[in-house]
Image 1 (cartoon, each protein chain N blue to C red):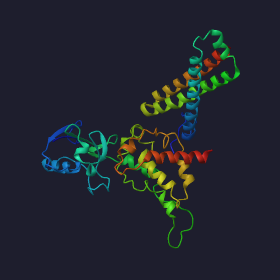
Image 2 (tube, rainbow over the protein chains, first blue to last red):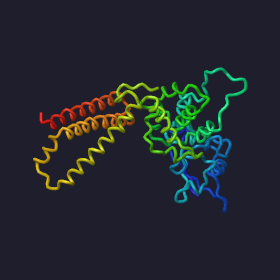
Image 3 (spheres, one colour):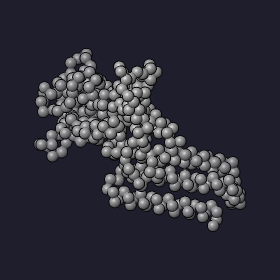
Image 4 (cartoon, each protein chain N blue to C red):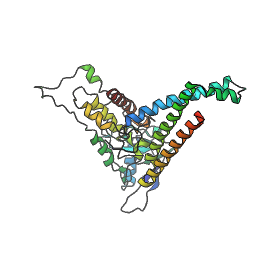
Length: 234
Length: 115
C-alpha cells in the first residue's frame, strides 16, 4: 500500500513536503491507521506523531486522513484510504511543530476561555452536590468530549479566527457547564459569549459533527447556547 | 468576550437575530414580487406604478430596502473579518460597504417615493 505522509522538520526543511512510503500490510486484516504509522516508524524512525492510549480515549493522535480529520487509532485503513492510497496530514489550521505533530496552544486557549470547571458560589454541602437523573442526563453527549481537536480544526470559522472564535470543541464544553445544574455562573458565562465572534462565528456547516470521533454534536450544543442567549435577552 | 465596534449591532446575538429577521422579509418580498409578476403577465407601466402607489407596498418595499442594507452589512462584515486580515484594508472595505448600503437605501427611497 502507498502511504503519503506530510513531512516537515523546521530545523532541517525549508518547506513541508509529502513523502511517499510503500508498505506491505498483512493479508486479511484491516489495520488501524495508527498501526500503519507504527510500522512505518520502524521503517523510518524520523516520522513524528503523537499517540498514547491507542484506543480512542486520549485524543492524542488526531490527524487528517485522506482529507478527513479523525483519530488514527480507531480509523481503519479501509475507511481512510482512497483509491488504494493513504494520505496523512497534520490537523489543518494549527501550526505544525514537526510532521504530524501540531501546536495545540490556540485550541487550549479557547478551551481555557470558557472556564471548563464548575463554578458554584453556594455553601459547600456536607457530602456532595446532588443531581437528579434528569439533570445528569442533560450532560450526555457533552461530557464525552476528549479534546482531540478534530472538530475545531475541521471548522473554517476556527481556521480564519482561531483567536476569537471559541470553536466547536470549546463551545460544546461551554454548553456542558451551562447545562449543569450544579453550576451557578450561567448568566456570567452567557455574558462572556454574547459577542459577534465567540459563538456567532458558527455558520452551522456541521463539519464538526461530520468528523467527531466520539459521535458528538457540537452544532446542536451551539444551537442550545444561542437559544439560551436569546431567552436571556428577550 | 471579543470587543467589536464595526459590527452591525455590536452584539453577536443582535446581529444574528437581525440577519434572520431580514432574511424572512427578503424572502417574503421575493415571493411577493415574483407572484405579482406571474399573476400579471401583460403588465403595463400604469399597473406597475399603481402597485407602488399603495401605502402597504411602499412600507413593504422600504422594509425590504432596510433589510437588504442590514443583511448585506452583517454578511459582508463577517466575510471581511474572515478573509481580510490587514486592519487598514479591512476597515476600508467595511467603510466602503457601509457607504454603498447607505447610498442604496437613500436612492431606493427616492425611487420608491418619486421624490
